[in-house]
Structures are given as structure tokens and as C-alpha cells.
Image (cartoon, rainbow, N blue to C red; front, side, top):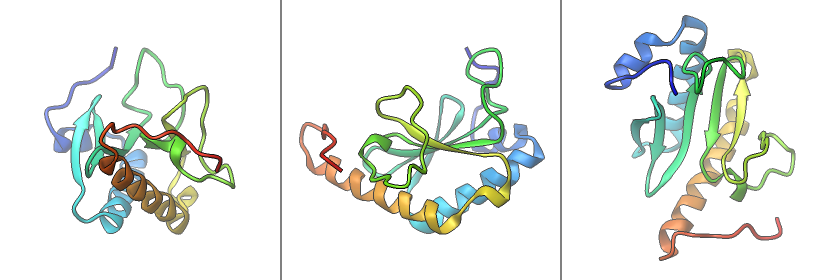
Length: 142
């Protein structure tokens, strides 16, 4: 189903084309600045970031799911994006019910301050989900 298989983050970073790599490096730095104790792990051949549960991921378009690229640049996704407050419709939802994302085609499109606010919101959701013994939280009227 995927065009590649990486053994570790270093293999992943070596594979990414230069234009995507610059965005991936910036996004990794933003995550590290927001959540210094985050765990970075490859899943589906891309980096996922976890505290209690998966919080977000970085998915360059060069790591395809299927046989063709479906977007350009780098996708930054939130695994529980449906729980995030998104009054300005910053995140794309597509036909997904849970995972929401933002695609970036170049470095200039990455609004660091805005993205950090969403990451901090996702961390709060992760904390709440870890307190909920069922691990399930329904979206309230936000």
C-alpha cells in the first residue's frame, strides 16, 4: 500500500526531498518547542508524536499512501482533530470523522504561532483523554 518502508526516523529524513525536508524539520522543531517530552515514532512510515496517546503526525506527500500523490507538500495532522476548537476552519476535515490536518506547500505557509496554539490544544485533549478511563470523548457543542 505504501511506496517505502523505513527502519527509523533517520531513514525517513534521508528519503524526503529537500523542499519537503525543510518543512518537516521546521514542523519537528515546532512540536519539540511545544512538547519537549513528546515521543517521536514512525507509524505508517511517517513520524507520529505521542504523550499518552498519538497527538499529531507529519506526512510528506513523497511518502504516498497508495499509488499516487493526493496532495502537495507536507501534511500536519491531528489524530483527534475533531475534538479541537477550530472556529477559523484552519484544519481540513475532508470526509474524515476524527483526523484533521493542514497541508503546507512551502515554508512560508507555516504560521508558527497559530500552529502552536493548535498543538497546545491537542496536548490538553490528550491529557483529558488519558484521564477518561474509557479513552473516549465525544465532541461537545464547540
